[in-house]
Amino acid sequence: MKTPPVFREEFYFCGMRYLTAFLLISFLFFSCKSADTDNPEDILPGNWFVLYPEEELQTRKQEEVYAATQDSLTDLKCLKLVRFSEKGKFNQQDSISITGTWNMKEANVVQVAGGGEGFDRFHTRFTSYKDGVLKLTELADARGEKLKLVWHLLRIEKGGATALFDETKNKWRNKAVKEESDNEIRERLIQMLEYYAVYFQLIADKSSYFMPSRVILPLKFYQHGIGLKTFDPASKFAQLFYSTEQAQFAGFVLKGAIERSRFDYKDNSSYSKEYVKMLEELAREVRKQIEVGS
Image: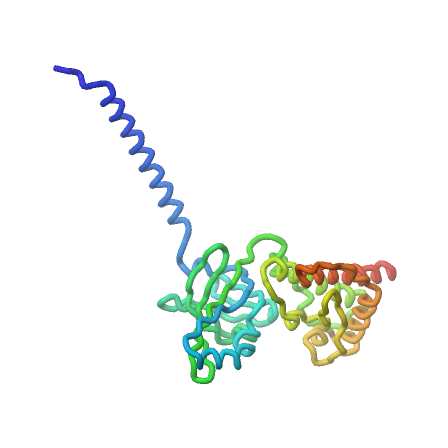
């Protein structure tokens, strides 16, 4: 009997090795694949930055309605920081005293309720999640039209922007329950200035626009400069302090810091990058007043 050619035996064993390797790789691939999830209920928990809505309008009438109602439909959500917790709780950083709820319905419907301005009733459909960007599609009612808005939310899970969700970095948002010393008021201002410096860095990195209304500090933003608004006792800023008098003192401190600052920063590619430096400079100026008094 002839002995089979050696090359056939080598082919057999070589083939078995390749088959074994293929099965092992396939097993690892599907194991890794199963570790990832396409389940919206697993994707949503976390911290998010609401970037913008992409409108998908079908008719001229819808375009007209959207043009007339755009501000009311989008301004209360754009450039806000929100959190979906694993326990079905919802929070936005602008309203940390308010805790809403979120849940998933059939057909990937995401419902947010009682989450503060812009998120009291927010019903959307999970659309996709890729490269850290979540898309939620809302059919917004406006003047008898159903306007399709695809919201883009950026996951915030690493880097300096995570500080925006840090509880200790948000203590300044808690209204004073007792009269504060002058330096305690200055410390609150420093926390606010440093917080918004981080916020504007996020804007500079991830957004093509910014909204002054997102900043509680009574500041005006100019080209290459920052100014102070007229004191408003009913403003969100004033409401953070124990009394109107203490809020006025905070405004006085901020005014002095602006007057002493040079704001010698020029970056024509992004005003937001300039504001980061300016807010950091203001924080340093307020800090100097504490050190001088100590």
